Image 1 (tube, helix red, strand yellow):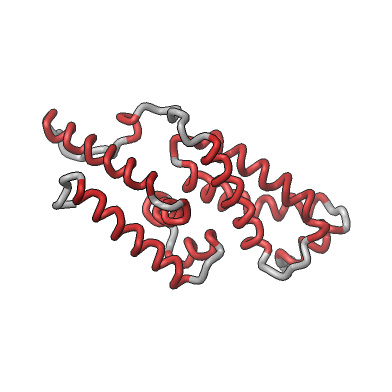
Image 2 (image 1 turned 90 degrees about the vertical axis):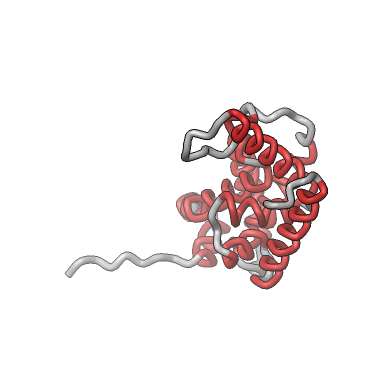
Length: 192
């Protein structure tokens, strides 16, 4: 009879890690590091992947140091993602006026058909306007949009990553779309 693999819960792993078991902490890192990276990336922007990696490392250093005082009043994932959100927002505030590592044309959407130069220019201008408008939104709206549209997260996943109820995540997305629609209309993009 094959051996059945027992999967420990986060709370069991936390208890082991609090007792100094580094394998338990490594498993917690394995379980949560991808989501931490993607949350950081959704806040910082896809052109800042290196910074999102740094945030991921910093978050897990903080988690490692604070794990002894973690009382389990919140889900471990929610606690980690809140640390991530704060860390990424703080980094973004410090780096707000830095130029991205990649040129805007590299980041623009790929167009399936061979558009003419006029169409390419219009698309690039719309992308630039959209990017500028998104960056004026509150951080939580930016994060919700990035997670949902760019990272492909479901509303439930957006809610979990932002540590808010699902209806609040829906509200963030709805309000962000309304604000973007209004801002783009002010810029002359009525058909977006």
